[in-house]
Amino acid sequence: MKDFTDRGFKSSAPLVRLFSSEVRGLNPGFHIAVLGACSSVEGHALLRRARQFYPGVYGRAVPAEGEVAKLSCPSVTTPRREWYYEPSPDEPAVITSSEEVLVPAGTLKVSVEATIDSDSEFVAASYSVKARLTKGEQVIDEWTHMQPDFATVSDLTLDGKTVVLTTKDALSDCKGDSFAEVEFRTRRFSVKNGKIAVKEQTTGRESSLCGPNYEGSTPCSIARQTALYNAVRGACENATRDDCMKAISEYEAEAEDVECNESYGGAD
Image (tube, rainbow, N blue to C red; front, side, top):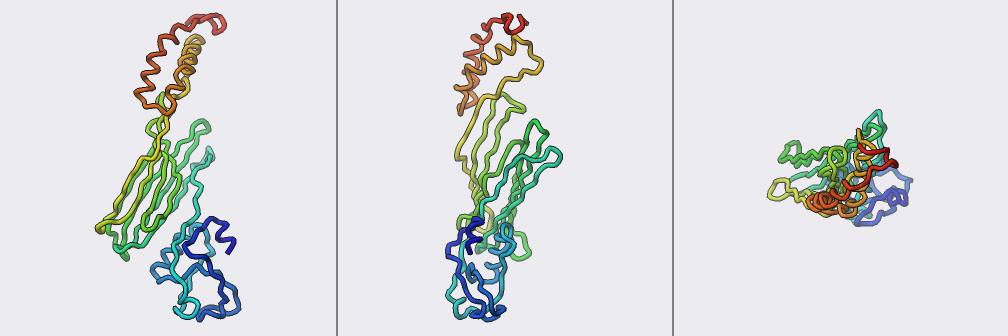
C-alpha cells in the first residue's frame, strides 16, 4: 500500500487491506491491497491506465458481497510522467502515454507521442496527440494534432471526465530566428453531444532575444553585434516581437558607433 502511494498514485478512496480468505473467489491465505470494487467496464478502464505505471495492478471478478460490497469504484490519478530529457545523439527518444475515461457516449482515450532528437548541438522536440471516442469496437469520433519544432509535453492528466494535456509550444526558436517565443498551453478533452470537444487555452508566454550569430563575422562586426545584444536583451525579455524589434532599431545606431580599434583586430 505504501509502495502504491510512493509511486505517485492518488485515489479518491484509500486503499483497503483485506484478507483474501474473506473474499469468495480469491485464493485464501493472502493479505491484499484493494483499490475498490468497480463494474467490469470501469475496472478494465482503470487497470489499463494504472498498468502504464504499475504492471503489478490486477483485477479479479468476485461477488459483490461482504467487505467487497462496502467498496466503491475510486477515481485514480496516475503519476506524473517525465517527458523530457537529453536524448542520445545516435537515437531519438520516443515517449508515449495515454489517459482514458468512460463517458455516457463511450470511452474517450487521449494518446500522446513525444519525440526528442539531438545532433549534439541542438535539441529538437515535437509531439503528436490523438483523441478517440469509441463505443465497443466502433470509432465514434477522432481528433488529431501534430506540434512540430521545439515543443514539449509537461503533463497528461485526468480531471474528472476530462483529459488535460499541458504543453510548451515554440512559436519561433533560435535555430531559424533572432527572437525566441514559446506559449504554455492547456488542452482539455471532453465529450459533448456525442463528439470530442477540445478547449484550448494559452496560460502563459515567454520570449527572449537570441544570442548574436558570429558565423562569418569580422572582429569589428562581432564587437558591434555584442554591443547591440547587451543593450537590448533586457528590453526583449518577455516582450512582444514588435517591442523587441523596436528596441533593436533604437539601439542599432549606437552599436554602429562602436569603434573598431585594435582590441577588435581593426576595422572591417
